[in-house]
Image (cartoon, rainbow, N blue to C red):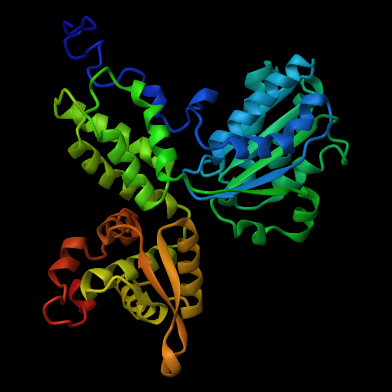
Length: 428
């Protein structure tokens, strides 16, 4: 095919690599026949919110699971189908989605809900973007719901990023408090199962939710998911083995379908930038490193600086110590030295243990209890599930930690030949 242009020679109207690039976008909700390995989860979510389609009150639900297990995808898929089913029964149902990693305060979240409702209904009143309190946004929400909808499903993605959980009580008690007669069902989504422990007892009681847990995809499911994205590319652009390699890398590391798709997208971008006519396994491997660093940065974006320093301490131990696993005490000793480098007061060893436990849940590290014999007793050994180089690069993206030693500096100081300890002061 002759290359097409847009009239301006700077731009092509024909993309030589991508055909339907939207299939690789994170927020894209695919058709039902492209959803893989989540039939049970679809049924479980539908069972909680399905009453809305019959004009009855739905249950609230919290969905937990690691990144890339389909929590957001399935929630939006089920909510959209519930909306369609409700409308076929002459029930006016809205679906509202809030990414709480961006709208991370109650005010921002309620403002987004109000603006989304205004956009869906043509609500005539002005909704200010700033300068008003949270309760004014709630008032707009109640008015629009009361005037326009019989029911609404509110999806609060990454709900653990909110500064407080009051929005759960406000939404779940709206009918009881006579704010609106609209039935409201809330789907909360979190990577952190510990989130439920942070809920105020009063809010937890009011919310009255069910809990669902999504497990990571296995290798065969990831392969099928990736094959369902092949038509994102032009015919014959993907070389043989690229889909399988991409799925295998994602399955080996963390079973994260979203990152597998991002790797494939980044590989296509690399091929296009370098003028390649095809996407090769080499492009996949390069893209995997970029995606892995991005994944770690995303997982730690809401983490405390001490969580990042804990990861960095473990990574630096592995790089300089010649072992893959370390005790909590060994990591803590390194962590204290690193805190001195960045002029940060260290937390206690028990506090560091809690940070490591959280990172284990997120899939960044693995922790295993080991018997140390009579002299030591049992203890935990921690290891990274990714290359320590990726951890170092991701942590140093935090502007407050960019003065930490680079991977190359740590590697050059590695005591692999002498088994000596890293002198952290040499980098201060």
